[in-house]
Length: 594
Image (cartoon, rainbow, N blue to C red; front, side):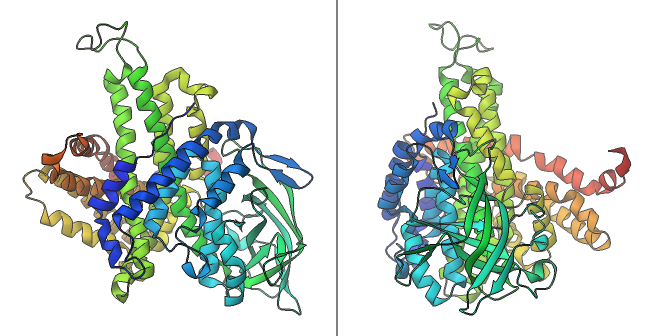
C-alpha cells in the first residue's frame, strides 16, 4: 500500500522564498492572496488528497471502470470522493468570481494539482479536463454560452472533455472527418466518431460538456478547415435545468495499461446538437488554449507520480535490511544494514529527489508566469510572460513526463522484486506514468513543436525570455564565493544549449530533417539547463538561510543541488555531442533495412 505526505515545506520554500510569493499580491485581483492564505489552502488540499484520494488509488486501479449499456460506472468510492471534491470548492479554485469561481492564482492551482496527481491520477483526469473546458469557454465562448455553462463547470456539477482524436488521425488533426452542419436556429448538427476520449462518459457529474473538433461542409482541407463546437451530453434549458439527451453515445471504453479508474471512451456523435466556439475554420486556434494548458497539467502528472515514488522508495530503503555497508556495519545490532547505506541506492534516491524538487520549482515558476500573462497591467511584461509560457510548455510536458517515468522506474528498482509485486503499489505508478509521454501530443511531437514553432517564432522572441534572463543571472554571479562552481556548471551546459540552438537554426533552414532528427535531444538538453537554473536559484536562496536551519532543510537543499550539478547536469555533454552530429546517422539508414 502506497503512503504519501504532501511536500508542503518544499512548496512553501518555492512560492514564499524562491519566487517571493508576495509579489503575486501586486497583480490586479491578487491583493488579498497572502502566503498565509496559500498555505492554509494547501494544508486543506493535502488533507483531502491524503485522506480521501490516496486510499482509492489502488482499489480504483484494480476495479477499473465498468461499461454497461452505454453507461460508465467509476470504481467504488469515486462518486463520494468527487462529491467531497465539489463541497470543498476545489473545482472553482482559480475560476473567475463572475462565474462562481474563487479567483485564486494559477500558482496555487498548480500546487494543488500536483498533490491530486500524486495521490490519484485517474481522479485528477476527471477534474482537470473540466477546468480546461472552463478556461477555453471563458476565453472564446459567447456571453450567452458563458453564462449558461461556466457556473456549473466552476462548481463541478458539470464536467468536460476534449474530443480531437479519430481512428485515422491522432497528431495529424488535418485528417478529421467529423462533420458539423449549420441549423436554422444557429446551432450545428454533428455526426462522426472520436476515440481515446478521457472522461468521455462517467457517473460523477450531472452533465458532460464535450469540446469537439469537426468540419463544416464547405471547409477547406487540412487544419485550416477545422472548427470547434461545444456539444453537451444533455442539452440544458435556458435556466440551466436538464433538457433532452443529446445525440452523444459512448460506444465502448478502453482496457488500459494504466489510469484504469479513468474512463477512456469511444464516442459516437449522431445528429448531436452543438454550438460554434469562436469562428468557423479557426477551431484549432481555440482548442490550442485547452491543449497547451493540458500539456502543462500532464507535466504535473509526471512530477506528482515521481514524488509518490520517491517518498515510498525512501521509506522502503530505510526499513529494508540487506547486506552490510562496505565501510563496516552501520546497524551492528541488526542482522543487516538498511539498503539506504548502499551508494547505488543513494544514487537512485538522490536522482528522484533532484528531479522532483527541480520540477516543482520550475512548474510553480511557470504557473506564476501564467498569472502574470493574464493579470499584468504592463503590456510588455504581459507579452514576455505569454512568450515564456509558449516556449516552456512543450519542455514541461515532455521533460517532466520523461523524468516522471524514469523516477517511478527507479522507485521499483529500489524496491527490487517487491516493487514488481502489485500489492505494494509501486508498479502502478510506472503504469500510470507511461501515458504522460503519449497523450496531449507525444514527447517527440513536443520536441518538434519546440524547435519548429517556438524557437523561430517572432525571430526568436520566445527564446529570448529564457536565454537573456539566464545569461544575466549567470554573469552577475560568476564570482560568487559559494556559488561559483555551480554557476560554472550551469554556464557550461547553457553554452552547449546556445550553440546547439544556432546549429539547429542554421542546418534546419537548409534541411528540415536536420532539426527534426535532433529535436528530442535538444528538448532534453533544454530541460536539463532549465532545471540547472532552478537548482542554482534554490541554492542561492538556501545559502542565505543556513544560519537559521534547525531542521537541516536548507543544508539538504544545497546538497541536492550539488548532486544535480555533479551527477545529472553533465548529461548535457552527451546530448550536445549527439545534436552536433546531426541527422545523417538517422536519415541515411536505408528504409528497406528496418
